[in-house]
Image 1 (tube, one colour):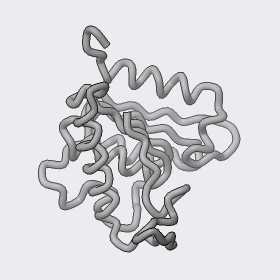
Image 2: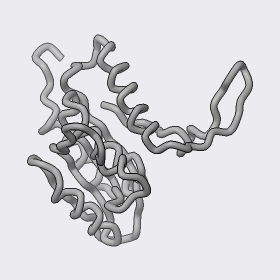
Image 3: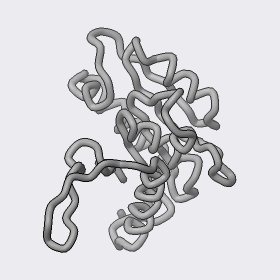
Image 4: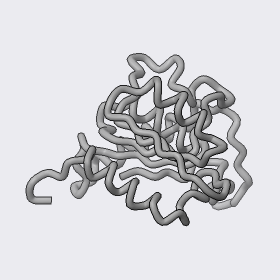
Length: 168
């Protein structure tokens, strides 16, 4: 399972070069997809990871990357996309210009206010695909997690779409 904290977002706003910390600002959106590709390659080297059965979970910008990973990397068998954006800055967050891009096996999760984005992206993904819209308070990305149904929905999706190998 891969749930990246993307560079220039969340806790990833400082990098260390030559022993010195410096602020980092993302300048090229394509770098985010390259980061996911590098993380997948790293996971494939881990003995405890089934290299052909990787899942990606993302929230907000990461939601778009989880969606993109489902269609760009054959090792990704399932994705969870929490609060994706159907009209992001830069086509890479929609899989544009990625050869053979074909998203599949994505669970889209959103609040009512962002349901249209989740539903629009779901229409571009191959089965299995599901959209769950959570009623109640407005919540974006990881702000959905306090809802008591979100984690069971996520676990259920991943369990159904990431089969464990015998002996795991």
